[in-house]
Amino acid sequence: MLHEMQEFVRESDVVEYEELVAWNLLLEEPVEYELYYAVADLEPYRAAMDAAESVRRYDLTRVDEDSFFVYVSRRTRPSDREFRAAFTDRQQEAVSVAVETG
Image 1: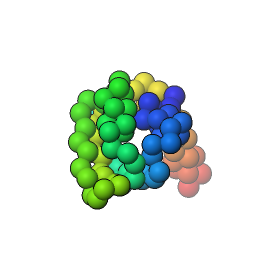
Image 2: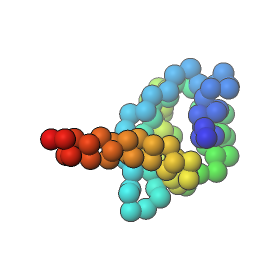
Image 3: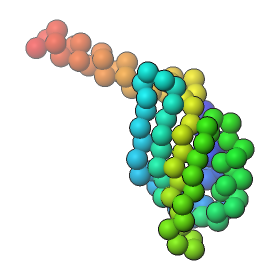
Image 4: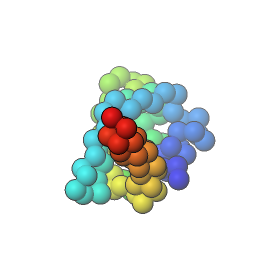
């Protein structure tokens, strides 16, 4: 269920720090947009992005010698939808119970 880039960040020593800055979903389309700040070696990071199957396009913009922003557009995977559904379903159940008892 881990995204290829999550595996890369966890299993390699290339990324010193990575932070999700912004994230946006298009509910009517299976597309997600994310902005990250990363302290990492740029070229191995770029190679990992090139290899990530769900990545549609991306841009790496240097901040300084050691860090950069990562803007990525990626396809929403079925496992992403399944993961989110667990939270959405619980939220809908909670609202339903509150309305019934309210």
